[in-house]
Image (cartoon, rainbow, N blue to C red; front, side):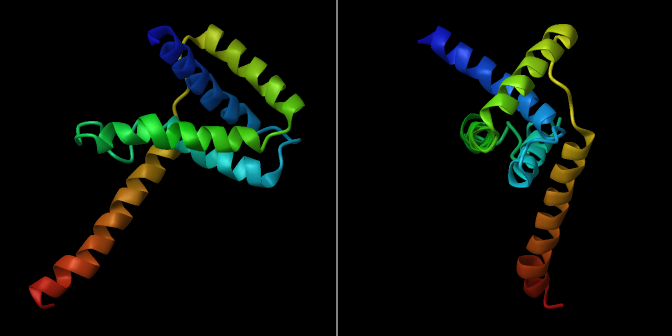
Length: 131
């Protein structure tokens, strides 16, 4: 059981990098590219949308949300292109020994947190203060 989970996690990690290559491939449909860019920005961001220290929810995005998004994006990519991008991902990961990081993804997560904070202020806190 543990070996199967370990292999699954390795495939998810590889497919995250695969989407990184697929987002740049000219034969990938625009919807798949858009989803791939979003997933890659989120998956490779050094900042989580829900921090891991938040009980249960912190790991929920890593265990449920991210694999579901990767699965959806992979399904939109044509099989020959997917195979090519997986080969590129395997080669890149064997050369680098790690997954890439996304500064754009980090900025996206920070922007979401700022937007959520401003919305919280506008709808909950500001009316309560009577302003």
